[in-house]
Image (cartoon, rainbow, N blue to C red; front, side):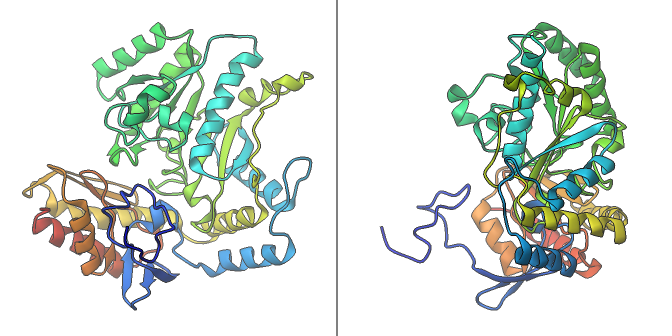
Length: 417
């Protein structure tokens, strides 16, 4: 093996033997990434959908700096601190219904793991045995840890090769059509004594291909969960914090899940933090004189004060700056910029919702070549599978957003070979 810089790093989703050397980033600001060679790229994906306020927002930077000088971290077992207390209170106030009980973790995958554990133990604490599976939807993605992987699409998803190693869950199509609703109702009836919960990505199945469904579909899922007495887990790790045009995607369907998962944009893309938020009904099943009824989970860096300070500062910005209006303005501009690709050679579909734009191609492109072409044109866009997508910062300028859509049209128009 030829030695080169970075040989000691094992990179995500990468065949290390074949991959070209990664680009070195040295600075970020707003919607721009500066590379070591001096080039500047317009970031079209906000660092995996996290940097909703753009990079280096001064309010978040100041809050983290102040917290760093006071208390970077302290264990959360047996101790508490003001940043976590304040953040939990604010999230409970923002979220719909009785989503009042916040369990902090440090990544989206772990937030899903905790949600699955909550759902299974919810039944055990009530004296009900055998409910150890979840119903998930084809096309879905919920994370890279074992429980989360088991709820991802079992055939087309990136984790399908682990099928024999993962817990066997129940899968259905999202109920977009009456026959799919009937099939979901039947599956819930057939497996009612095995199921602990249903898990769904509200409105957009993100890493599964930016697959979108209307609020009515989400409302149908919630209604069937109520009919069958099953908790609903809403995975809003991607969709939360304005990405779909409202603060939380569930609001567009007027539903209140029993458990809701948050991460990614929670800290404004500053550092790792996640939350699993449960309703009072779910929490009450753990409120007991029996120590065995406690939720046995506790990440070492749970409720990290630095991350909580960043998240509180991010919420400040949602209160004081027009993020949701910006998301809706981005939706109009993405539609204008990407819609000309509809019907173009090699394009199957164009989808836009809030600050999410996706162009689905008719075949699997040469992803390495495609990514290189975007960089050559001064933009940072990372397609996956057959989807070229844009999820920019909500603060992106009109000119930068127009440049992104211009380049997407240019590159796709020249072919993806």
